[in-house]
Amino acid sequence: MKYSSIKLEMSKDTMIIGSSVVYANTAAFPTSNITEGTRVFAQDNNRPYIYQNNGYYLIGDSSSYSIS
Image 1 (cartoon, helix red, strand yellow):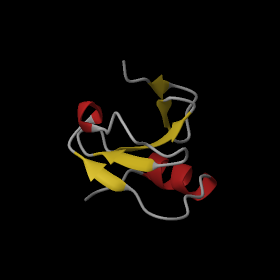
Image 2 (cartoon, rainbow, N blue to C red; image 1 turned 90 degrees about the vertical axis):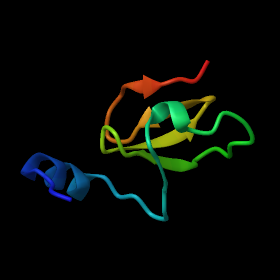
Image 3 (tube, one colour; image 1 turned 180 degrees about the vertical axis):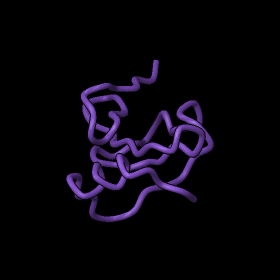
């Protein structure tokens, strides 16, 4: 897997401790029995998310992906 210098710089600023479960895309993220702070990774867009306040939030960005 290849990473751009932008992603490498971003990863230096964002500390992620623990592990994430890899899913094919955001539509495949779990929708029930989710614990606050659960980390997931979307393989299609190559981005990590964290579950907070009833939604998935892109780590290192103020955008969110909410499940309806």
